[in-house]
Amino acid sequence: MNAPLTSRVQRSFSRSFRSYHDSAGQQAQIAERLACDLHKTGAPDHFRSALEFGCGTGHLTQQLCARFAFDALTINDLSPEAGETAVAFGADFLCGDAETVPWPAQPNLIASASMIQWLPDPAAFLRRSAHALAPGGWLAVSGFGPRQYHELVQVGSAAAAPGLCGPDAMAAAVSDVLDVVSVGETEQQMHFPSPRQVLEHLRRTGVNGRAQRTWTKSTLSTFTREYVRQFGSDAGVSLTYHPTWIIARKPG
Ligand SMILES: C[S@@+](CC[C@H](N)C(=O)[O-])C[C@H]1O[C@@H](n2cnc3c(N)ncnc32)[C@H](O)[C@@H]1O
Image (cartoon, rainbow, N blue to C red; front, top):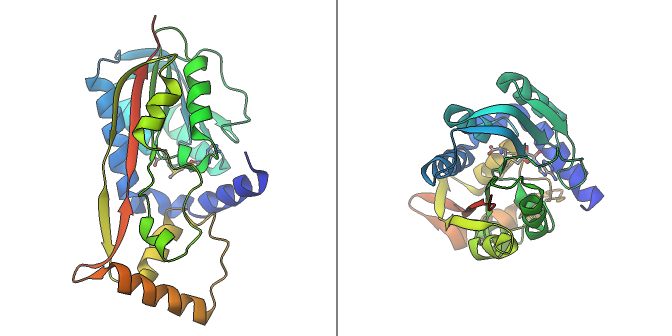
């Protein structure tokens, strides 16, 4: 991974670690849907070993632990603060970049929610996960598609993540190794009273690691004017979330 980007992303999520959990309502819903789909599509109730990437404050960890039992659960994150999540769920913590940390051998489940968009090549990460799984193992991963935060892109912000990935690309990345059980996408709009509150929401959820921007009075005023002009309505200004996900299984 691009080292300056990785350290900006890490600093940004570390800074927002205390505000993230309660501000990330969309990510909480995504994690619940992913764990629920994994359960509904026939994954076993018990896994010998599981590996979760980008655990953060544990939205997905919590949903997985509520539905499945694990002999060994390893959770990873770039941010050292996420070690607290491992303690809370009795998991082993693997701190560092998912692309470069050594992965435990042949996990029976690889899971991740709302993390792969921060990787420059999420398809390569999915392919590597597919190969790493034990025979009969399961993959449950969510990311975000190209409509994610499209408002910010249209008003010229650099906050968008580098690895936006639609469900077809996710399926194509693994389909020569895994049986794709389900893929999906949805679009949700949040509304805020003003663009300033959009920026505050991004800050609280750690999503400003790429926005190297230093605001001046003039750039903030242009951003605000354009945002309201293009995306304002009686409900406030919109911010779009475009979650995408895949559940797949390795033949036994
Ligand atoms: C949007 S949060 C999602 C957290 C949690 N999975 C959830 O669903 O709420 C993204 C998390 O991925 C982590 N992250 C970003 N890039 C990463 C990387 N290259 N390796 C490991 N973790 C990463 C961040 O530190 C952050 O905790």
